[in-house]
Length: 592
Image (cartoon, rainbow, N blue to C red):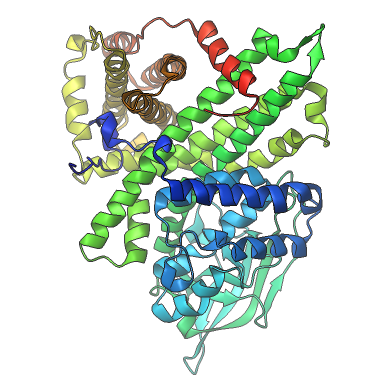
């Protein structure tokens, strides 16, 4: 078997893969499915029956449920066996993140502990720190938190004011400062805390135990959603942190913070899939029960449109998530083969895919917001009642667009990182873009393929040219000022995001058909609608960008090129959506 082709982060804009080189969720092995089932069974037994109690903010209850999950091994999925974990690969970690994503506030506490509460110590800690802390975090003996955000330092994390001063005897760092919006703060035993040593320009990181004198945790905040998640301010008043509890090297904290954010973004992108599927199932079951005008509302075209669109967006996002998850696994193995230690291999591989991390954080959080909103609408007045879980889902979803860097920040990262990677030599984005731009009038849309998938991939290649033209044109027009033109950057990021998801979806369904899937026409419907709609969105974003930077006669030539490149095959989206909705309605749950 030949080695799977591996693209670098952002390289999908100028290169493409064969469908056989893309991992799809239908390829989960038996062990992965069993692990996911264990997580589902735990949620059914421990979480769903207690949702109302959890939402009352009972810190002891949440900690007890987390510890129970630890007894099943759920807290150690990503931790190597030598530290009491299961040592599962990244794809499996993402599947667990998806499965637990249906757990509302529990999901937030769980993902915080397993991710940002544990992984910084695993990835950046020394052997002594791993043995002392990770071994117990993996089993749930202790619970972790992550303390980065401050009142004056949100997206600009490096502007934090918390300080760490070396004691006169050189044995401790004296920690002083304040952190806010700290998940699990109310019951965490350990905290990864970021502070500046002396007059350092950048952050350092420390492992702090919550029981140490001077650590003060405020009462939990009152929040719009995720009410069962303990979120509090933490104060450090002359806290004596042993020097051996510095995490990584002095001044490495900012790098640690950014790397862990990449991981958090990616896992949030998986987490929302579970929440989306749960909401879709609740919505179709309600639609199959609720009658109006003497018929079930599931029979109405307007409801079918909503149900189908919920499925399309979830299935498309899921396709992209597991595509890049396998890319990360392959890169981890490559780094390990080159002699890199496991922890650094893992975090470096995740951080490498910074473009995709940001894409999937934004796309996933906005996908879920759309789905829970439509879920409430399908439930009608009952959707606004706290009796229904869809009301909880609606409130809980909103934080995801703020978590792990706001979507505004992440949109800027998509375009900025893609350009920087190309300038670094990872791939020739700007060279290809310049070639297309210098031949605007000669650019012809690819067409003429008779094979279904080649037609779709031709469309996607045309849309990639739109992205390259927009990137080059904006850089040419604005020069160094492009970094301040955030509206245009957003237009281009939206284009890039749609391209990545559309391509991932198309390759997934193509591979599915090659494996002999029996109901492939339905999945072609999903591809048809998504690519058709994506092309329309890309056209709008491209024209908005061009109108912001191009002048005549170049403007007219650029717009003409965009119009040619954004044309798609005609799709009867009404009938396609009805067929998708009918399967959902017949199954009475999400089974795509």
